[in-house]
Length: 316
Image 1 (tube, rainbow, N blue to C red):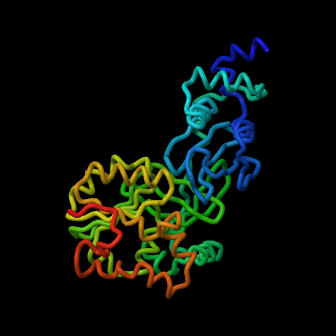
Image 2: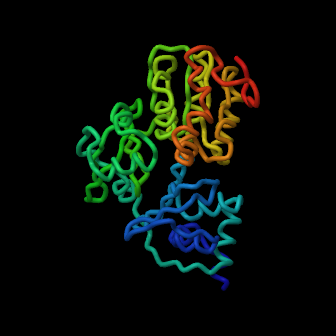
Image 3: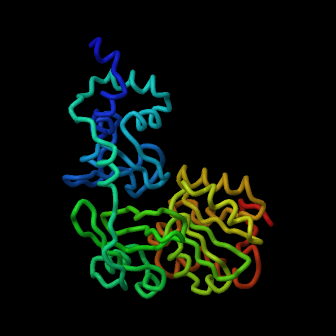
């Protein structure tokens, strides 16, 4: 008992992340022998994007772009400092069974090796697009089928390239990115900007109105961790319409963008009962979806493109 009271960081880092999450009441949404995926314990979400590597005993939250060891996790979940986190871990009597992992090994195993980039053709990816209500021809216009390798095994996903040459990778069972991670910026030489949090939100808006690319530049943040990186981009435009997620992380990012720019317009009220644009679109039939946010089509005629009624954003 006394040893637990004096638990040191070196020991605590070897406590299982999976065991700590279970103790805090979190169960994996899916898992295999190498990893487990959870709904994030750090924010509200409906699709699991919190990954735990069983081999590395490390976690990574793709929604906020942060990760670390078990001490970092307890600090964030319990909103405490390292000293208090160690007390929590001591009090719960967690087993210390994993040997320390060399840092160079940890980073070596995290890498994703791109093997091939081609037109989207795999039946599983086409089926996944159908489930997300994204037409194949539209996905092929902006995305690719990316073949990659992790830990010696090959995988395939729908990939959206970012401006630094990295890839956001999505399939029905996998959500990750190939370095370098950055925003995706579709420049069309326009004065108005649309900002989404993820690729499927962008594709949903373009499915609603393909002409948006003729009237707007489009920025996909790929992670709210790039909020500060997005601010100077927004300032270059006359208007910037923000279609970020309706969870805590998305709202925080929207608030920060609005507070640091004069031309940001929060459009999340259009899908306020849903997590994001794509979830909103998937939950409605084609006619209801187009009717519910049909004002998007007015973007080609006047700024700002949505009715002033119920607007939460600022006017430029």
